[in-house]
Length: 262
Ligand SMILES: [Zn+2]
Image (cartoon, helix red, strand yellow):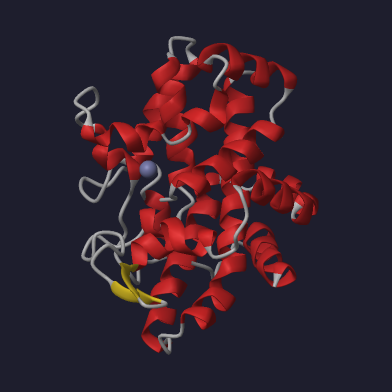
């Protein structure tokens, strides 16, 4: 399966063709991503991150932007966590969203670009960095680049074993929890399994990765139409592609922070 996934990535990278699916992560997902990123920072970037965030560090603060959604300090930040796309869009329309931010359906791309620009000028503060660490994880969660019509899978009901849930929650939380690892174990496992693909992921453009995510999300919706309702079948089909997204998110966050603090 790993072979299959990364062969898809490589095809996307070398030939500009894509065929994969993508939504935001729960607490464990964001910690896994932050740990993978932290493990892959340059010395300079690591010092800057540690200095800015203090002794609790990047992993501790990775979930803070979700926690403060109920606070009043950043009332507009709710829609920074997602960017919706309709189904069946052409690659050129999807890619265009990176430059011409869509007027509705989330503000994730605009938020990330603005926050990164602020950090690069040296004027960023501890909150700016916490948002960048978190949002650049959401960026690779398939239900955070999903459909406006169903609120990123939040309206798609599913049964997870005997529990009522939503497609969004399956991708934020249930698939990750189904594997039974701690965030540390999970990050270390993924870094070991995918280390030979790190350079490829580092080298991919934002456009290539966005199209990869978009097609990944589309394939999740397509599978939904044929799924037999068996939770084990769902886990078997999707846990490895989900892990690949976590690894991609971690490596791309490392790349971003290494660029900001070079
Ligand atoms: Zn989020």
